[in-house]
Amino acid sequence: FVMKFLQGRNPDWVNRVFFAKFNPHACWLDDLEPAFGEDQFFYEPELEKMMTSGIRNTPDITPRTF
Image (cartoon, rainbow, N blue to C red; front, side, top):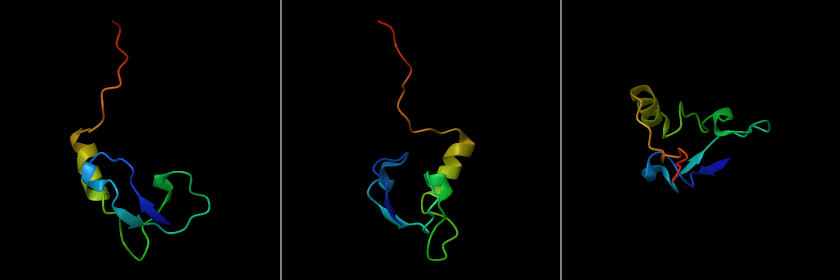
């Protein structure tokens, strides 16, 4: 597969092309593996650091009452 983020936790990931092995059963990004002998996708080291440090780059979607 040829992949490209339309949005990401890091804006630098957006529009960056990357490749995944074909998997006819893949339904989500987590189901894919990097292609061409790569050990991980380009974003995985930074994402892992974000997840382990508790840093999240997501908007506040908490419902508010006015």
